[in-house]
Length: 152
Image (cartoon, rainbow, N blue to C red; front, side, top):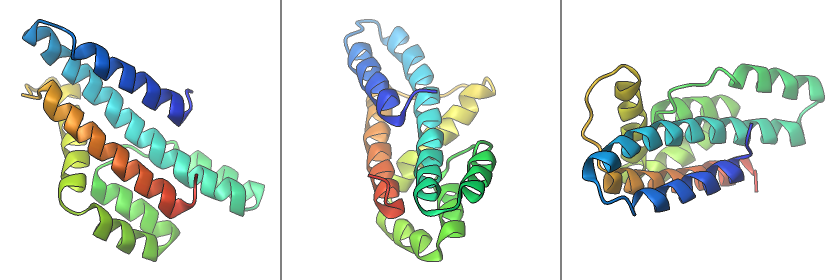
């Protein structure tokens, strides 16, 4: 599995390339593909933050248990992320909820909602510029998750 840094670099490169495509229909197809990748990046980032938190602070057996259970974390809607972080520390949930309300949470939820529609073959009207905005906000959320969990 790629590291979080490698995934972000790859996504950044893809976003820069898709902006150069002259064909609007092709950009639309790419926006759907990128939406799936960004959603996966969110899942992996959440897992990374919490696994790293445990790796540094917990006994190896506890860390292994947490890692094994986080592999199944899917649908990283903001509510699910908050709930998961709240299981580690209720204050984390309260802080993150306050920091991400509004546009940041909406962007994360839009990424995951569109990804679910795409995965089920539903039609989505997702422009590359909207997805780029959602992605930038998702990066802000990931930075907050990293800061909250103490993962530098």
